[in-house]
Image 1 (cartoon, rainbow, N blue to C red):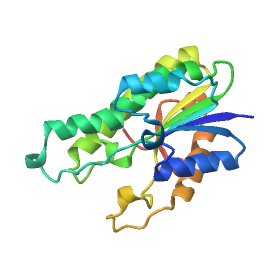
Image 2: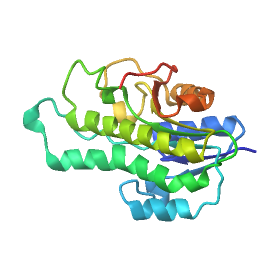
Image 3: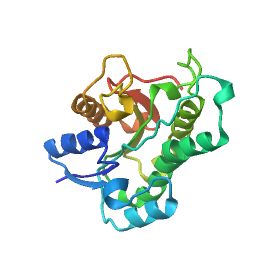
Image 4: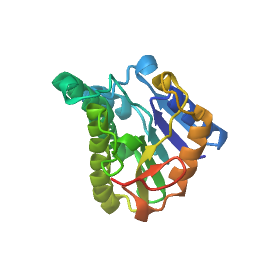
Length: 215
């Protein structure tokens, strides 16, 4: 039986990812801040939490994230908010990968996916604003892209992917007026995309429909 690890499995998307993987026959292990004290903003917590697991895991999914208060103008920029966004949305997932690489198999296909966001695309940014969140997600994309290049040398069958889940109906998007995907819909499509990627596509940035997003 394949094994999967979901970081942030108590959140809306994370819980749906866990349920989807369970339905596909994976044995799923979950870690969350609310239940397990697993804090992606604290490397010691990441090291301890992942160090307690044996693996190997065929699929690891980081479903954590934080929106904060999106800025509408430069006047609203705050060093503290920018640091908080980077800690959770960029640095945390990268440190998860750092400490999880020992849990990933080297001799067979495996996947590592993390929630990014289309607003982290520089090429797709036509509206401005949301400075801290956009920059943090762009940072995540760069960190995982670089890590994918390194890990391809030691884990030739591994795919590392940055994934945009769409606008998902969770408390995170409660005030969004647009149409939304259900968590189950998003999870199903994200897992379809992740497991279909080839090692040659590692380090890429994809949406829930499998379309590559410009950097």
